[in-house]
Amino acid sequence: MPHINSLCAKEPHEPRTTQPHVLPLYATSSFAFENIDEGIAIFSNQKEGHGYSRYGNPTVDAVAAKIAALEASGTGLEAAGLLFSSGQAAVATMLMGILKSGDKILTQGNLYGGTTELFVKIFQPMGIETILTDLHDLEHVEDLIADDPAIKLLYFETPANPTLACVDIAALAGIAKRHGRYSAVDNTFATPYLQQPLRYGVDFIVHSTTKFLNGHGNSIAGALVTTHTAQMRMGGGIWQAMKLAGTNCSPWEAWLVHNGMKTLALRMDRHSENALAIAKFLQNDKNVVQVNYCGLPSHPDHEIAKRQMSAYGGMLSFELAGGLEAGIRFMNRIKFCTLAPTLGDVDTLILHPASMSHVAIPRQIREANGITDGLIRLSVGIEHVDDIVEDLTQAMK
Image (cartoon, rainbow, N blue to C red; front, side, top):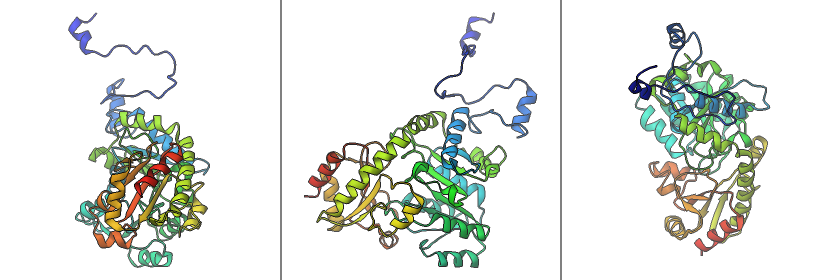
């Protein structure tokens, strides 16, 4: 029997005899090998296994595999996933894994502001240029890619943040494939419950799992899913970028995402139902100039959304008459909804993009893409819809 001070330091024997019903939280930095041969095999990528949690962790890997399964469900495709410390980390690690200096990214001007900043402020100085264009103009997109072999990635959001603009996933993925380039889509707003981009030929799917996949606002994490499964396994380019840059997700954050995903289907149904009702209400308010919700027939991309989404989600935005002053006044009058710089939680969240999420984006780029001073973004929650309507009504008086 070891001495008492040794017993204090050592791990106890695990007494588990049956399989746990809920995914365990593996809060461990490393894993013990049976022998040195096993350690050598794992560290030389000859055998898949866990050695150090930055390289892989059972809790994290299980949740990543679940998100990949959701994205591939019903498609007949094999997909692999990795989890990261945030959605931004997922995007950055993907770029580090598939691009090099001299390559270019072709994307839209109405991306989430943080993604645009990541491309322009971090990757552009490293020699990876970003080209902005209107991705609705498919002929122009194809001409740009055909004429410039340095464009290696076509990156887009649909629906986009915060204008809810939608683009044709199948058409854009097809263009990229015809010219041997990668395509990637941010599927955060829709989630795989409402939209499965792999079905339309996309190479990579990015999620900020912080948002709808988790749904409860209690974790920050991101996911990347792809059919290029070798890139995600031990020794693959994207896995290696994650391992060396340390962009991996913690097991605690992964476990919270897993818990949230159990109610994803129920939540997305209610988010979509409430958001459609709010969008119809806003259409009839004299203080509102425009409502951006892809579930409305009046939305310019409604037909695109109808083809590739099973419902239209919980995100919308609307333009107030009166510009910046009206936007600030409206935000300060909100009582029931929450002013918060995030989205996808069970409660209704409201944001003023021009002064918050897109404040660092040049004004001319913002306004050219519909992100004006009077624009309000609404992440519609699962509360009783009448309570949300009542708050919006009093704030606009």
